[in-house]
Image 1: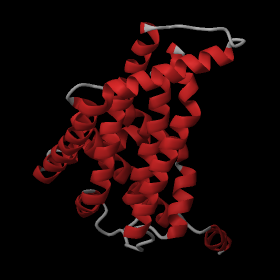
Image 2: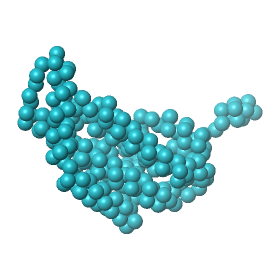
Image 3: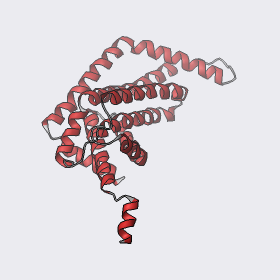
Image 4: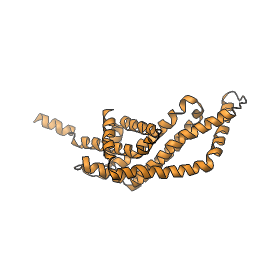
Length: 251
């Protein structure tokens, strides 16, 4: 847990740089424009479509008893769309940042804290694109699988946070290490830091719902992932090899 919060602290310091401030603003504005345009044209029709499907699921799940929730189901559909809209904006901003900003952010962090860290380039543009495709496909799949649960009030705030926490760490972890780590190192670090990475993803998903603070979320947590993963990569390379350590002890 301490590594998670220390990486966020380092990220806050990096936010003060003008280049990071610019990256903090424009991806979110672009994402807001795109999703705002979609909401203007399709929000009502999608809400009514969701309400209709919720009614069908309830009727088929309660001994086929006819159920007419009326305004309650429409209201539930609007609530779900609101809960989806905010993380969708930040997921879009995150993907834009992943393509157009993460390389610059990695360079910014590496030049100030990890200047001596060797670059083994275990990832690349093709891998980053594929990682983004997998993240989007996973988001859609998780959304479809959990959709019947969204009409149960306790799950409304929990499901989008859980889904987007997974997406956040999936997108950011690859781009944070692609330049410096080998493919084998990336796999080992992702496995070792599974819980801290998901925790960062959860905090990112929660911050996205905070007014105004959500603007800094993509860059802040992009920087935090970079600090966390590059620090782990540096520690991994500095750790003695087990066989070598035993030989030195024997001498």
